[in-house]
Amino acid sequence: MPLKMLPEWAHEGLRFECTECGECCTGAPGYIWVSKNEVIAIAEHLNISLEKFGQQYLRQVGKRWSLLEDPKNFDCIFLKDNKCQIYPVRPMQCKTFPWWLQNLTSEESWQQAAKTCEGIGRGEVVPSEVIEECLINQLKENNFS
Image (cartoon, rainbow, N blue to C red; front, side, top):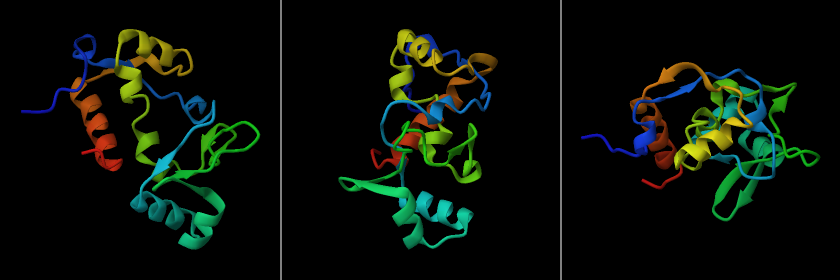
C-alpha cells in the first residue's frame, strides 16, 4: 500500500505547468540542498573538477551542502537570464518544486505558493501519485527516509 502524504484536499491531484519563469530560483535567502551524487553530476555537467566545483559553487551548512546564492539578490548561482544553467542535472529540491511539504500542508499554503509561481493552477492536473512520489524522493534525497 503506497504511503499517503497528501492532505484530503489534494487527493484528486493539482494543476501545475512549469512556465520556466525562474521565480522558484529567486527570493529570500535560503538553501539549495545538494547530495554527493548531485554534486558529482553537476560538476561533470559543467566539465570541472569536484574540487573546483566545491570552491566556486558550494557552502557547507552543518553536515549538509548547499549551492551558493548570488549575494546581491539571493538568486540561485546557476540562474542566468531566468534560465537554469544546470537544468538537466538540477538538484532534487529543484526537480520537485512546487511539490514541497510546506506548499502542500493546506489549501492556503498552496495558494500562497501560487502568488510567486505562475504555473500553479495552470495546465493538466498532476495526479496525486506523481506528487506523492516527488515528496518521497525529497525525503530519500535528504536522508529523512
